[in-house]
Structure formats: structure tokens, C-alpha cells
Image (cartoon, rainbow, N blue to C red; front, side):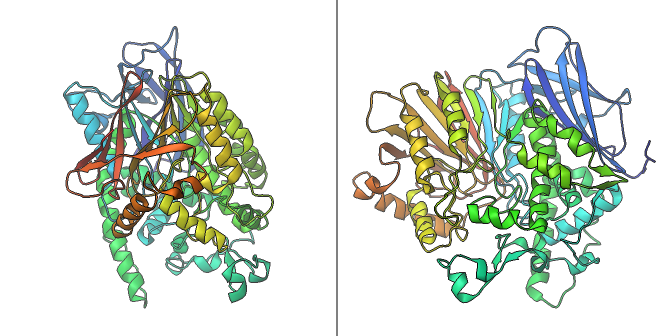
Length: 618
């Protein structure tokens, strides 16, 4: 058994309630020493199936599946639980809502209220909207009114490609004090030994494609500029090693781990005045982020939470074009970074999404990669990239279908520099199967299916100039085959009468309703986009796009018939905000609250990070 480091918190992360069904409830937590972990549910005899994954000398990750010993667990009713570590009852009072003695969650069956959001950047200078979600749940439970029973996070739960300087320092404090197992170093990636030399200076160590190998359609070829594999403009502190990803996940979700980092002693001296100023701004923003983490932890301990990756969970523009994929796969250093991002997603997000039913197949290969307290991951990478079951469903009412729009891309075989379709034919057929013979369905698509046409037009212009990565040409309509098949699915007579699509990614929020222009299938599709939880789109620019879209693509505009979704009638719904004027598009950090009545949309609200609230006219 590991030697106890007495100053470390016992609970480093969690408990977090993940996939919750009548037959099984999955919870996850991280402790600073190996423990015999057991959960008890009040009023129900249960058994625990525990998976322990050592991640460091003082870091142990647990996935616990709690099953009823007989029958099924009650649904749509609060279930209280207690955590025992080595048969000692753990004090979870900080995770309890007012007038509750223990944390409690609900196994969702008939969905009445759902929380949804995406894009949570710790150092972005706004408050964390997850704290607003926690407040909403707290008030509903205290007043004994209907409370949300499911939290859906649809991408960019971390920003691996946009890491603040103080965050990178905190990451290394956590790595050192928890003794996180390090990835075996290779000759492919070499960084300075001194962390201060790496701050805001990692970009030169990230690989590039020589300009000679770039497409002649791109301006970069003619300017003789090498093409960076990692395209984020904020990649100066990009995460690289597995232990960095592990530490980041802990810091993104746990106030306890921030106790291992002293903000007051943290500093960064450089001759670059802009970097010094940026460091201080990031430091102040992170202090506010840390203050909200106890509320975030309480939320995760009291509501079933399901997740899906988008690009920033791994890196910006992940798999955007076939050429991007080819550049990465041909370079061992770049491939290693992508693998670490996907591996850490599997561990902290994917495992809990399906309670290990399919994702557990990777566990044996991962565990065998640890040798002499170092990760040797070359063999595991093969199994990781062959795994193709990141998508999943939840058999609630309405049924929940969560889409993987990153690893099943429909590549453009004629031109590798063209954007790939967000899902290939096989995955689109999977979606069609899940929608058939359902009356109502909720789909989680990280990128909006029905986006803002004016913005998509600008993206199309950049793509035509050979620069799809500059403006993230990442929308469903960017690929002819994928767009056509998706529209055909929605127009089928055997698809739901009402479909609600929950999306994020774009850093602004909106509400569109969609109906087929032709055909006898009287269905309605709701496109509800909420973004970001802790991120925002430039407000002035968004206001311009809002007016431009309203003018160029008004109902009478002939431009509508030149879009790939011309057979679908899109109606934009007005936003009613407490203090901001924005007719249709709203850039104001928030998490959304979706209310359902008789399995149909009854209300769409935005709970903003600053405590205000907006809603859309339906």
C-alpha cells in the first residue's frame, strides 16, 4: 500500500454521479490513497462493482457500478446515498443541498427538466455557469418543485489546446505532489526541463508540415509558411503528456486539488510585457474559477451527468479535414498528443457515459501499459484508435441519442483539404435507426445541425480559398453527402414527430425550429444551442452576424434556396433577456434549462453565469 501523504485531501475528485438507470448507477471518484470503496443507497439493498485504476503514487481513480440486489431501482424519485472508504463513512456534508443530510440524485426516466451546455474554459474572464446550474437545482429542491434530473455536457469540457500559464504551473504542482505516473519520454517530444522556460513557449516544440507539402490552393504554400499540426491560436501552453491531461481534469473539476497550488507564490517573470500582463489576468480569472468549484462539485454529486467530446477536449480542429488527420498520423509526436487527449477523455468522461459496458474493453490494455510507474502507451494506442463506440443512447422518455461527431468523419476523398462530414454513412444509418418509430427524441450533436446561415457562408468563403482551419469550417452543411443524408433522415415519415437537438460549440446561444417544406410528415425539429458555460463569442461581431443573417436569409430571400437545407423551413425564435438586447443570437455565458411537458418542448431558458436569466419565445 502507498505511503500516506498526510497533507493531501482524501477525496481528490467526486463523487460524481454519471450514467444512472434502474438497473445500474455509475459513480466515479478519485482518492489520494487506495481505498475499499462502497456506496449505500438509502432504503435499497445494493451491491458494488468497483474498478480501481492507479494513476499515481497518491492518485487512484474509481468507477463504481451500483446495482440493486433484487428488482430495479426507483426512477424519477430522489435517491440518497452514502460513501464508505475502508468501511468508514465519508463526510459528504459539503455536497448536500439545504435540508438534506446526504447527497441525492434521480434516475431519469420521464424527462421533465434537463440541463445542457458546453465550452468551459477555466481562465476565460466570466463566471462559471455550472455554479448557476447548481443554484437552480438547489432552489428547486429546497422549494420541492420540479428539478432537473439530467446534466448533458456536449463538448469542450476541457481546453487542452488553450491552457493558461498559471494553470500549467498548477498542473505540475499536482503532478509532483500526487506523484502522477509519467508517460515514458520518447525522442519525438523534447521540452526544456525548467517549466518557466515552457510557459507561453511550447508552440515551437509542436510539429509542423513543411510548406512544400502543403496544398497549392493555400496561401501558405505561396508564402512558404510551414503548416502547424496544432492549429489553435492559443497553443502556447498546449497539453502534451498524459500526466498533464490527468492533472488538468482534476483541476477542472476539483477545488481540493487546487489546495496543492499556492496562488500567492505563483509568479512568472519575462521581458515580454504582454505575456506578463496576460499571466496576471489569467491568474485572477482562475482564482474566481476555483471559488466556484465547490458548487460545481456539489452539482456533479447530485445529478446524473453525461458527456461527449468536441475538439478542444483533445485539440482545436480535431479531424476537421482528411489532410489534418494525415498530417497528425504521419508524425509520432503529434499522434502521441492526440492519443493522450482521447485517452484522458475515455478515462474521465467516456467510461462513465456507458458505465463501462463497452468502454471497459480498453481497461486491460491500458493497465498493462504501466510498467515501473511509467506509461508505455504505444501498444495501447492501437486499441484506443480502433475503439469506435464513443456514441451512446439512454432509454428515457423521450429517448436520448448522443452523437460522436469527431471520430466517424465522412472524409472528402477527392480533396483532402475539404472539410470532412461530421458523421460518415455508417453513423448516419445508426442515427436513422435510433430515430425510427420514436414519437419524440432528444439528440445531442456537439455542433449545431441547423446553424446560422450567414456565419456558414463566411466559412464557405474561407474554405473556397483553401483555409478551412482558419474559421473552423465545422458545420453539418459543409459536406454534401453528410448534409443530404441527414436532411433525408429528418424528412422520413417514420422519424419522430418532435425532435430536440441540443448543441453547443459556437460560444453563442439561439433557438431555431425547423419543419419540412414538402411531404405529409408533420414533424417539428428544435435546434437549441447553448454555449458556452465559461466562454463567449465577441459580442459586437455576433450582433453584426445577427443582423446580416436576418436580412440576407429572411423568409422572402432567394438565397435560402441555395443552401443545402432549402427543403427545410427554419424559423428563428426571439430571445428575451433581462438586460441584453439581441433578437436571435446571444453571446452571454450560460447553461441552458430545457423544460418538457408531455415529452415535448415547453420552455428553453438560459441560466447565465452572472445570475441573470434569459428565455426564448417558442
